[in-house]
Image (cartoon, helix red, strand yellow):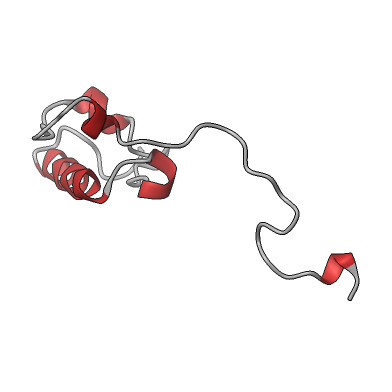
Length: 84
């Protein structure tokens, strides 16, 4: 089989860089505040979608809390739902 026909997403690729870690676990954060807009905006894309765990590096527990905090801040109109 020719090399260009090989299947697999990481075939022949090496992964470099630093391993992602949960910032909230490292800082021993128990509760993510929905009023802390600067922290929440780091976890939103340009189109105000919530970034997934594989991109941010947060653990599952803090990702759920982060999603809840973002949704609450949108409900109170601290964060927009979509770009203007």
